[in-house]
Structure formats: C-alpha cells, structure tokens
Image (cartoon, rainbow, N blue to C red; front, side, top):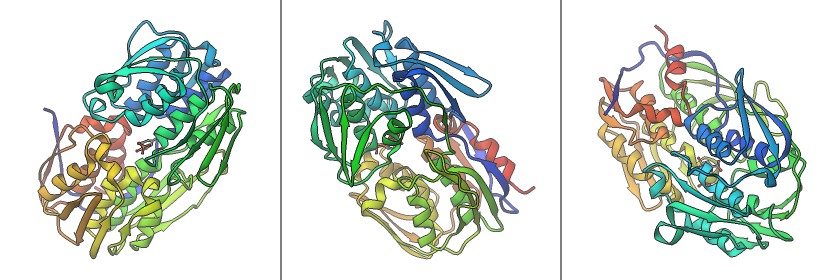
Length: 430
Ligand code: S3P
C-alpha cells in the first residue's frame, strides 16, 4: 500500500490558487455535448479520474471526444447518435457517471453493460434503476439491479410522475435525462432542493425545463443544440483550502474562479456561522453558472449545527467541516446526513474513525456526527480508504498536527483533484 508522510506547516499558508474545474459540471458538459447536435467546446474541464471515466464511456458509445490544449471538444449527434457499445462501460469510482449514464442508456434502443470499481459495487443503484424500470427500461444486475454489474436494454420510455424518496442530484439528473427521451411530459419532485447543474445545462443547450419550487417538469423528444461550456472551479475542492486557511495560524488565501451556484454554497454559510473570515465574491462573474474569487484568513471559530435543507448544499464538504469543527470552540452537531453512509465510503464511519486516531473528540450518530472542540490533533497513521475527500481532509489535518502524519493511499485524491498536493505546496510559507 502506498503512503505519503506529511508535516505541519510552520509559517502559515499564503498566496493564491486557481481552483480546478467543477467535477459535477465537467461530467455533465461531456454528457450534454454527446447528446446534443453539433460541436461542444469545454474549457477548464476537470481532468480528474472520475471525469475521464465519463469521457471513456461516451467514446465507447461512439462519440468523438478530443482533448486539445486543455480543452475538451465533443462532436455530438443527438441521442440517436449514441451506438450500442461493443465493450463494457467502466465508470471506475464515479457515482455521477453511472447514475446519469443509466438515465441516458434507459432511453436508447440497445444493450449495454456497466461496471465500476469496488466502491461503486457497494453503492445503491435501486434508487435509479427502480424509477427507470417504471418508465420501461429493462435493467438487470446484481441483487435484482441494485448493484453493479448492471445491464440495460433501453428504448420506448413512458413519462414518469415521481417523488424522489432521497434528496439526490444524481437520481434527479438520471430521471431528467431519461425523461428527455420519453413520451410526453414527466414530473419529478425532490424532497429538498439539490444541485441544479443538470437543469441549468438543459437550458444552456437550448432545451426546456420548468422548475417550480421542488417540482420539475420536462417534455420528452426535445432536441438539444451544442453549446460551449466554461467550467467554473469546484467549490467542493476549494472547501479544503477554505478550511486550511481558517485553521492554520497566520494564513491568508485567495481562491480564484470558485463556482458559486447557490445550490452548492452551504460550506460558505456554515463557515460564516462559525465565525470564519471569508470575503466573497470579490470578482463575481455571471455565466450560466456563477463563479468568483474567495478570500479566507485564519479565524476564531465556534461550534454550530448543520442540518435540514442545508445538507444537500454541502453534502460533499461534511468531511472537511468535521475537521474544521475539531478546531472550533464548543459543540458542532451534523444531522440529517444519512446519505453520507452511501458515498465513496461510509463517510460517517471513515471521518469519525480517522479523526479519532488523531485525537479528535468526535462521535458518530445515526445521521451524522457530534464534535466537541477545540482539540489539538496529534499525528499518526491514517488512511484515505480510497476516498478522495477523506484523503484531502486528512492531508489538511496534517497541517496542524503536532507530529508527522502518514497518509495511506493518497492517490485516491486524483479522482477529483489531481493537482491537490502541488497547490498545497505552493501555498506553504518556507
Ligand atoms: C453529485 C451529486 C451528489 C454528490 C456527488 C456529485 C452530482 O451525490 O455527492 O459528489 O454531480 O450530481 P448525490 O446525488 O448522490 O447526493
């Protein structure tokens, strides 16, 4: 097993970095480029392993995708331009790839089979396969289509009237992508608002989607037209440096081009409530996805409660919020976050177990965790457990540990942030 040894930073973190492209938007740019008519040029695409898995799957479906000078160029020929793949589609570690792909393939009149890595093999697919079957897709797989490997024979979809049992943008997006290929109008209702990149992308590609509160209406048979996409920086990647800037003494960081879609900015709300000195946006840009620069300084923090409608707006940031809470005065309670159990790892367990090894006062609950702070963190041996966000959280923890930290399996980080350690080293004051 590979590992990296990490030391505390002595003189704080200072400087600026440009945050790499948003993972959710990068996936969708390739998918929409593939199902639209014409040439889509994507700038600031995230070359993380997850998004490369999406490119590889769409190439196997016959779509021409080129990577030139840091841009991704997709030649789309509409839904009908996708061909029956002769090879198995491998989504690697990517939940977004498999779930959205299931939605697209359910409408296609051909056979395909999908696999992923060990972590994907544990992630529940029934939440997508069940409503897609209701629409008419023939899906099979392990445990009655609940887990990979999965097979799909699609085509001839009926519209869907469906209330999602869980707040999940991946499930919502899969159903919207199927609904675009179905007969008539579908209605999808989400229990709580989740990230709306799919809805924004449909409009950007010339399609129609109606959203009233949590009710979404999509007409089938729509044709999408190619459109260039500028991917903003990923706030879920910026989050690691926001927290680093807040907890490492003598730090001042400027994070550039961070996506500021309001369905994703829960981390900023929570950090502000805890007393973090974040200034935003210094330079907001209006595109179909808003973005801007964020400035963060070392801050005095106090505990807070993170719950309810805020959870989907920061679901991927909970591991790093837990670390932040270990340095805040008082109690932080994170609840209503059962979904953490079905992420790349069971993130309630991995966060609590790994932070406990460093001396944090943290306990798991059924739907989240409780952290009492502040506690100094000691070094020691910890693992990413193959989960990119756990790996980055622990690498940020190392910056304030009293002794060296050994992080097992750091390469998992390249799933969403291949340049993470390069950026971190640039910000260290020597
Ligand atoms: C994502 C949605 C979220 C998130 C994941 C990316 C997306 O998953 O955790 O990293 O791109 O739609 P869920 O929809 O399962 O909550």
